[in-house]
Image 1: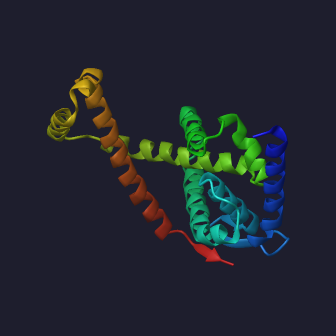
Image 2: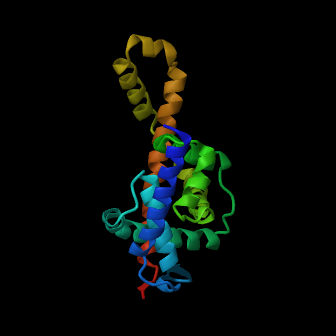
Image 3: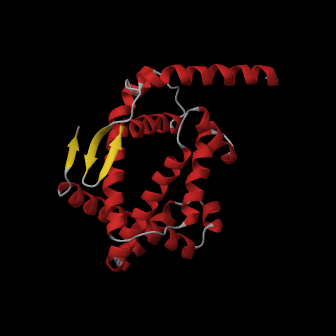
Length: 218
């Protein structure tokens, strides 16, 4: 494909994005649409989240995709606001920077683009890149919070681990057995089990918070 043709396609897509922005928010002014305790969600936040989710799915920005993703985007914003309240309350400010890097790498891989191009492509979609990064950081700080609270409850059953190691070894092909040591298999299983436990703790903790949080739709 020639450079000229690529530029024309990019220009057409950019014009389409500009024209379809009105599909998401009818009003041209900023207004609060949801209040979650001391956090607010505006129409701008919703528009940005809708565009972000459409981008992450590699979809086109059109009315059907906007309609399909709008409710999920709203739930994402409410979930993130609740998490942010708890993070601020517990004074969590750090997270594993490598996790953010891996997250961006996975996005680039899934969309078959270069990681260095994510910010520029989001700009073309009129997505607030800083808000996107902030959202990812909130999720990662939430993970840090959950680990901090429940790290002493991650004890695993050694018999269960041993049984899973044996099951895994029995189902591996011979060439895979030579590449994977028992120790590596054990570490992978332990890591998986701990992550599963942390996810259960995360879901339970969030559910309790949501039930006690005042959510007002404006």
